[in-house]
Length: 168
Image 1 (spheres, one colour):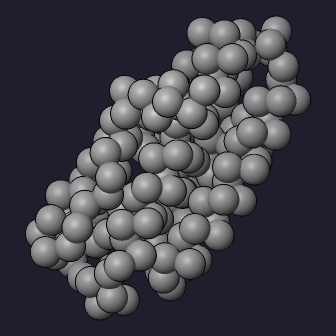
Image 2: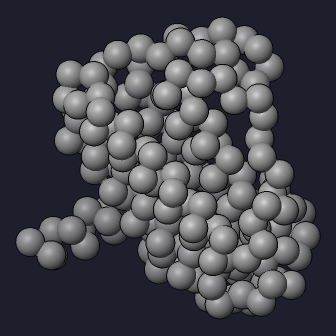
């Protein structure tokens, strides 16, 4: 996986985030926080989980040891979710830029939240972050349908590539 490939994956990740948040912004606060019985209770809790996971990986990439997931109630509404997720994007992009093309092959050593030691290639962990977000965006799409709301515009990777191709 090249530096350019990883930049494209981050571009995709945040393009899909924006589509998701645009759809979620139509929800009321009650709908945003309504328990729906998924992996994470509500749309808000699922989005909070995605952000918390990105935050953990960002900390690991910076050589820090996170102690746990942040509570979902820190995100009061979609505006707060967008703000937090945009700050994470800035951090993610800065780490990648600082690594540069040769640094994406480096290995990061860290302990998971259970204390187990790991040594993974940076590029694999970034791919994991994007894949993890994709999984949970799909869950939010199902929740939007359960709430009778309009789902996001297509968020598939191929839709992203096609849109980018049309713009050139």
